[in-house]
Amino acid sequence: MNNSLVELNNCGVFRNQKWLVRGVSLKVSQGEIVTLIGPNGSGKSTTAKMSLDILKPDEGTNTIKKDIRISYVPQKISIDWSLPLRSIDFVNLVTKHKTSEINDALGITGIQHLINEDVRNLSGGEFQRLLMARAIAKEPHFLVLDEPVQGVDYSGEIALYKTIQEIVKKINCGILLISHNLHVVMSQTDYVICLNGHVCCSGIPSSVIKDQEYIKLFGSNIDPTLSLYKHNHDHHHLPDGSIKEADKNK
Amino acid sequence: MFDDFIIRAFVAGIGLALITGPLGCFIIWRRLSYFGDTIAHSALLGVVIAYAMNFNLIIAVFAVSCFIALSLLFLQKRTNLPDDALLGLLAHSVLAIGLVLLGIVSFIRIDLMGLLFGDILSVNITDVLFVWVGGSIVLIVLILIWRPLFAATVNLELAKAEGLNADLANAIFTILIASVIAISIKIVGILLITGLLIIPAAASRNLSSTPIQMALISSVIGLVSVVLGLQTSMIWNSPTGPTILAITLGVFILSLIPLKKLLISKKKIELSN
Image (cartoon, rainbow over all chains, first blue to last red; front, side):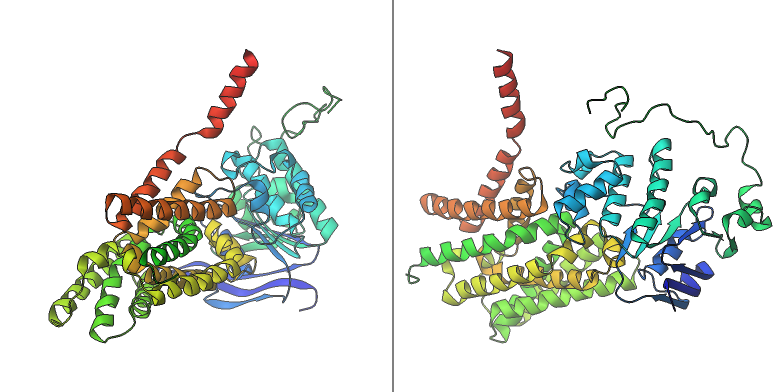
């Protein structure tokens, strides 16, 4: 299986008398970003879980390369109120890291100042950044990101996707990314798989976006009023929200 | 030294408090308090079997507890019923079976009060040994499985995805609970065990900011409650198990006082003066 980290071969999951997803084949190799898109209930998370071997496929085979480090950013995670847990403890959850490594990882996602903060005091977006930081602190070979930017503000979303791309370059890992918005992730993606209970279409982003199946699911053009407005900030924000240029002492 | 029943009581009680601390934290974190109750209720069946077959009480209770825990895992997979319904089903049916057996095997005379509320003053050397040897094993195993168990407590799928053996850690943890309940039957009794597991951990929650801190403080609170409870029960001649539990409740109420806030606001007042 040469340089591929994870391979699904015609996989399907059957639960409660129906197929959640069926006939999915995909391959993630080192240094590659594969994006799964599709409407709600189309089997994106299920597919991701098969690639992590949390769910065993009821048909087909899932193959994961042996002895690789895997990081997972799940779609939803809720911390029980009874758990006293700081950001630093959360980063150390599966693998213990040096404080300097933790600082670096939190710095990359822009929440270094929250290292000793109780996880329950974090906002939704901050928690999402923490999940990312934890995932990259491990320097994984294979990284699964299930809607990693939900709840992150718009400029943060773009920045986080850029971060993801930088991580791939830096640690040369393979990424399986789940997103509901292809336009935002397009420029970072090597390969796209469009799911709706089965694989509708797949290929490089520029070809998928022209595919009839894709257009049926997502429409040919985004409503002009909703299309992405590109603007350049004339300033930068620091993690705590203050403006970098306004306060040069920082 | 161990000839004195008071000393035996202290040694057994302190040993138990040290184990129930960290284990109780996991019971709270994983919302398993009703599971503890179920295991404890079913312990009666173990006691009856032990008496009827003239077998070691702690081992019999441990065996029955493990059986109930495994039955729960089985039922969870085979039925669509929610966990609390399954636990209720097991707790009360097994308790009933225990009572039926107790009636049938008429030659057994069990001190039912002692069984329900424990009798720490009657523990013998073997019991003390069970607490300390068994307890040490439980603690060592808990430390060994801490990382996968804790990760699975925070998020099961994440732990599994990243290669931790979460299912094994969960199964071992269930056995640990069964063993602690078996060990503590004689000391605090069926009805009060869950309290000794949960209340110190609950009090500790208000005083700690990391998981390990919470586990350690919980043990200290349990230890203090056992010592104070034993002494109080001797002075007032009150039943020992319930007295210990009453003290843990007292510590819990004290833990609700927001000390940090009070200190900070005092400092502020001093500063503004």
